[in-house]
Image (cartoon, rainbow, N blue to C red; front, side, top):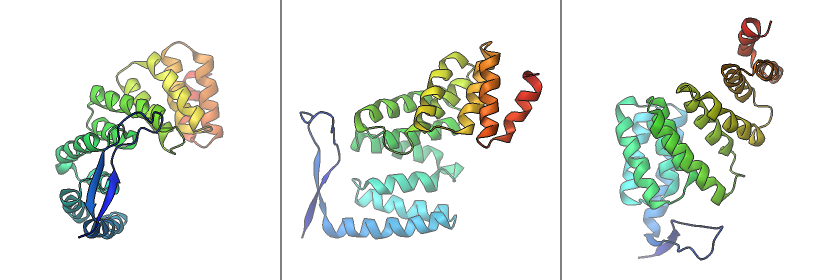
Length: 219
């Protein structure tokens, strides 16, 4: 029986940190890859229920296969009846893949969709902290800040949201949605000129929805 070594925890910024290394049966891992690829196709076809069931078998037999958790999120977030199970599995994944910013971000998304904003803010904050360790070159890091800011906005913490929107723009320049939402927060904190400037930029970069704000608040 052949085994391959899986490193489930990497702290690249500090080589003194321990790495968790697991032995995984090579045949099991190969099956995990094939089944996950099949599930990914089902997700593309919107067959979310079957895809989630397949991925649950992968995670049971090969709990150290990161791609299974990522695709399980993609499938199961579309199945409201399985939200509780998705939260549980994402939490379990973070005990395996420690300091994994991507998985922490997905957990935040689930909480935000459930209007559980304090829990979402906590998960996004962890994702942001982990990204400082793992590197901000991962293409969705801008969304960690954007979504934490959205949760702050939804809980009327407008002043706190502005720095997150600003940092998100640093990572995703010319993003019209960020400008739209930051503009709203500027307006709510009595910075009308900055708000109108953001809404103009949002329109410039492709979000015509900001026109309603300009017409209402920037006359």
